[in-house]
Figure 1 (cartoon, rainbow, N blue to C red):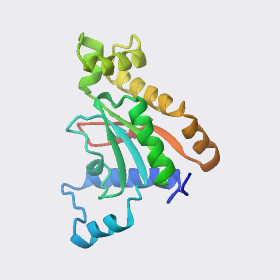
Figure 2 (figure 1 turned 90 degrees about the horizontal axis):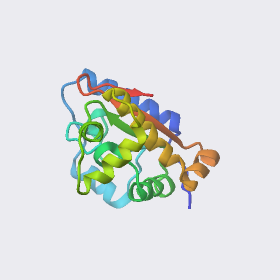
Figure 3 (figure 1 turned 120 degrees about the horizontal axis):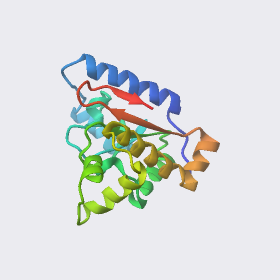
Figure 4 (figure 1 turned 45 degrees about the vertical axis):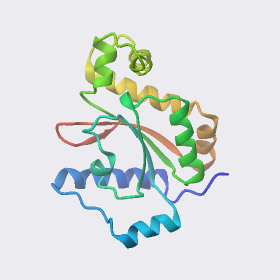
Length: 190
Protein backbone atom coordinates (compact mmCIF):
# COMPACT_ATOMS: atom_id res chain seq x y z
CA UNK A 1 0.00 0.00 0.00
CA UNK A 2 1.50 3.29 -1.13
CA UNK A 3 1.83 5.88 1.60
CA UNK A 4 1.61 9.60 0.75
CA UNK A 5 4.99 11.30 0.46
CA UNK A 6 5.86 13.54 3.37
CA UNK A 7 7.55 16.01 1.02
CA UNK A 8 7.91 16.12 -2.75
CA UNK A 9 10.97 14.71 -4.49
CA UNK A 10 11.97 18.23 -5.54
CA UNK A 11 11.71 19.52 -1.96
CA UNK A 12 13.71 16.52 -0.71
CA UNK A 13 16.44 17.21 -3.30
CA UNK A 14 16.60 20.87 -2.24
CA UNK A 15 16.89 19.77 1.39
CA UNK A 16 19.81 17.49 0.46
CA UNK A 17 21.53 20.28 -1.50
CA UNK A 18 21.06 22.72 1.39
CA UNK A 19 22.34 20.15 3.88
CA UNK A 20 25.40 19.47 1.72
CA UNK A 21 26.16 23.21 1.57
CA UNK A 22 25.90 23.37 5.36
CA UNK A 23 28.23 20.35 5.66
CA UNK A 24 30.84 22.03 3.47
CA UNK A 25 30.61 25.34 5.41
CA UNK A 26 30.77 23.84 8.90
CA UNK A 27 33.37 21.79 10.65
CA UNK A 28 31.06 20.33 13.27
CA UNK A 29 28.13 17.95 13.01
CA UNK A 30 25.32 18.05 15.49
CA UNK A 31 22.23 15.90 15.69
CA UNK A 32 19.49 15.69 18.27
CA UNK A 33 20.10 12.47 20.17
CA UNK A 34 18.16 13.48 23.25
CA UNK A 35 16.08 10.88 25.04
CA UNK A 36 12.87 12.68 24.01
CA UNK A 37 13.88 12.69 20.34
CA UNK A 38 14.82 9.01 20.39
CA UNK A 39 11.61 8.12 22.22
CA UNK A 40 9.61 9.98 19.56
CA UNK A 41 11.12 7.77 16.84
CA UNK A 42 10.43 4.67 18.92
CA UNK A 43 6.79 5.62 19.36
CA UNK A 44 6.06 7.25 15.98
CA UNK A 45 8.24 5.31 13.55
CA UNK A 46 10.53 6.67 10.90
CA UNK A 47 9.71 9.21 8.20
CA UNK A 48 12.83 9.69 6.07
CA UNK A 49 12.64 12.32 3.33
CA UNK A 50 15.14 10.59 1.02
CA UNK A 51 16.48 7.13 0.24
CA UNK A 52 20.24 7.15 -0.29
CA UNK A 53 21.97 4.16 -1.88
CA UNK A 54 25.68 4.62 -1.44
CA UNK A 55 29.00 2.84 -1.20
CA UNK A 56 30.15 1.15 1.99
CA UNK A 57 33.31 3.31 1.89
CA UNK A 58 33.93 4.65 5.40
CA UNK A 59 34.63 8.13 3.99
CA UNK A 60 31.09 8.43 2.63
CA UNK A 61 28.61 9.06 5.46
CA UNK A 62 25.30 10.38 4.07
CA UNK A 63 23.98 11.67 7.40
CA UNK A 64 27.07 13.89 7.67
CA UNK A 65 27.30 14.80 3.99
CA UNK A 66 23.69 16.07 3.97
CA UNK A 67 23.68 17.48 7.53
CA UNK A 68 20.85 15.08 8.33
CA UNK A 69 19.75 13.75 11.67
CA UNK A 70 18.37 10.50 12.97
CA UNK A 71 15.33 9.46 10.95
CA UNK A 72 15.97 11.87 8.04
CA UNK A 73 17.53 9.45 5.57
CA UNK A 74 16.91 5.81 4.68
CA UNK A 75 20.46 4.70 3.87
CA UNK A 76 21.41 1.54 2.00
CA UNK A 77 25.14 0.88 1.81
CA UNK A 78 26.88 -1.65 -0.39
CA UNK A 79 30.36 -1.59 -1.93
CA UNK A 80 30.24 0.15 -5.29
CA UNK A 81 26.61 1.21 -4.69
CA UNK A 82 25.49 -1.70 -6.87
CA UNK A 83 21.88 -2.80 -7.00
CA UNK A 84 20.49 -6.30 -6.64
CA UNK A 85 17.20 -7.74 -5.41
CA UNK A 86 18.07 -7.09 -1.75
CA UNK A 87 18.66 -3.39 -2.31
CA UNK A 88 15.58 -3.16 -4.55
CA UNK A 89 13.43 -4.69 -1.82
CA UNK A 90 14.72 -2.15 0.69
CA UNK A 91 14.13 0.71 -1.76
CA UNK A 92 10.58 -0.43 -2.52
CA UNK A 93 9.88 -0.75 1.20
CA UNK A 94 11.02 2.80 1.93
CA UNK A 95 9.17 4.27 -1.04
CA UNK A 96 5.91 2.41 -0.49
CA UNK A 97 5.67 2.01 3.27
CA UNK A 98 7.59 4.99 4.63
CA UNK A 99 6.39 7.57 2.10
CA UNK A 100 9.81 8.49 0.79
CA UNK A 101 9.61 10.12 -2.65
CA UNK A 102 13.27 10.64 -3.58
CA UNK A 103 15.87 7.99 -4.32
CA UNK A 104 19.49 9.10 -4.73
CA UNK A 105 22.25 6.76 -5.88
CA UNK A 106 25.32 8.41 -4.36
CA UNK A 107 28.60 7.23 -5.83
CA UNK A 108 31.93 8.83 -5.05
CA UNK A 109 35.25 9.51 -6.71
CA UNK A 110 38.24 7.33 -5.89
CA UNK A 111 35.95 4.33 -5.35
CA UNK A 112 37.85 1.16 -4.49
CA UNK A 113 35.15 -1.09 -5.95
CA UNK A 114 35.29 0.75 -9.28
CA UNK A 115 39.09 0.55 -9.20
CA UNK A 116 38.89 -3.19 -8.50
CA UNK A 117 36.56 -3.66 -11.48
CA UNK A 118 38.84 -1.63 -13.75
CA UNK A 119 42.29 -2.78 -12.66
CA UNK A 120 42.11 -6.10 -10.82
CA UNK A 121 40.75 -9.62 -11.12
CA UNK A 122 38.98 -10.13 -7.78
CA UNK A 123 37.63 -13.48 -6.73
CA UNK A 124 35.30 -14.62 -4.01
CA UNK A 125 32.11 -12.72 -3.32
CA UNK A 126 33.57 -9.34 -4.31
CA UNK A 127 33.48 -10.63 -7.89
CA UNK A 128 29.67 -10.27 -7.82
CA UNK A 129 30.17 -6.57 -7.16
CA UNK A 130 32.98 -5.99 -9.65
CA UNK A 131 31.18 -7.94 -12.39
CA UNK A 132 28.18 -5.62 -11.98
CA UNK A 133 30.42 -2.56 -12.09
CA UNK A 134 32.27 -3.91 -15.14
CA UNK A 135 28.95 -4.34 -16.94
CA UNK A 136 28.07 -0.74 -16.05
CA UNK A 137 31.33 0.87 -17.15
CA UNK A 138 32.19 -1.24 -20.19
CA UNK A 139 35.63 -0.32 -21.46
CA UNK A 140 35.83 3.07 -19.74
CA UNK A 141 39.35 3.67 -18.41
CA UNK A 142 38.87 7.08 -16.78
CA UNK A 143 38.12 6.43 -13.11
CA UNK A 144 35.81 9.43 -12.62
CA UNK A 145 33.83 8.72 -15.78
CA UNK A 146 33.58 5.09 -14.70
CA UNK A 147 32.17 6.15 -11.30
CA UNK A 148 29.53 8.26 -13.08
CA UNK A 149 28.60 5.39 -15.42
CA UNK A 150 28.30 3.04 -12.46
CA UNK A 151 25.93 5.42 -10.64
CA UNK A 152 23.77 5.89 -13.73
CA UNK A 153 23.64 2.11 -14.21
CA UNK A 154 22.41 1.65 -10.63
CA UNK A 155 19.69 4.25 -11.27
CA UNK A 156 18.63 2.31 -14.36
CA UNK A 157 18.48 -0.90 -12.33
CA UNK A 158 16.20 0.78 -9.80
CA UNK A 159 13.95 2.18 -12.50
CA UNK A 160 13.40 -1.33 -13.91
CA UNK A 161 11.34 -2.13 -10.82
CA UNK A 162 7.66 -2.09 -11.72
CA UNK A 163 6.86 -0.72 -8.26
CA UNK A 164 9.28 2.16 -8.75
CA UNK A 165 7.95 2.83 -12.27
CA UNK A 166 4.42 2.99 -10.88
CA UNK A 167 5.47 5.32 -8.05
CA UNK A 168 7.26 7.61 -10.52
CA UNK A 169 4.21 7.80 -12.75
CA UNK A 170 1.49 8.05 -10.13
CA UNK A 171 3.19 9.79 -7.20
CA UNK A 172 6.11 11.81 -8.58
CA UNK A 173 8.87 9.65 -7.10
CA UNK A 174 12.30 10.50 -8.54
CA UNK A 175 15.50 8.51 -8.94
CA UNK A 176 18.60 10.72 -9.18
CA UNK A 177 22.29 9.97 -9.73
CA UNK A 178 24.90 11.88 -7.71
CA UNK A 179 28.64 11.83 -7.06
CA UNK A 180 30.32 12.76 -3.77
CA UNK A 181 33.71 14.43 -4.15
CA UNK A 182 35.98 13.22 -1.37
CA UNK A 183 38.38 16.18 -1.55
CA UNK A 184 35.76 18.94 -1.28
CA UNK A 185 32.77 17.25 0.37
CA UNK A 186 30.53 18.48 -2.44
CA UNK A 187 27.70 16.38 -3.85
CA UNK A 188 27.17 16.77 -7.58
CA UNK A 189 23.77 15.73 -8.90
CA UNK A 190 24.28 14.42 -12.44
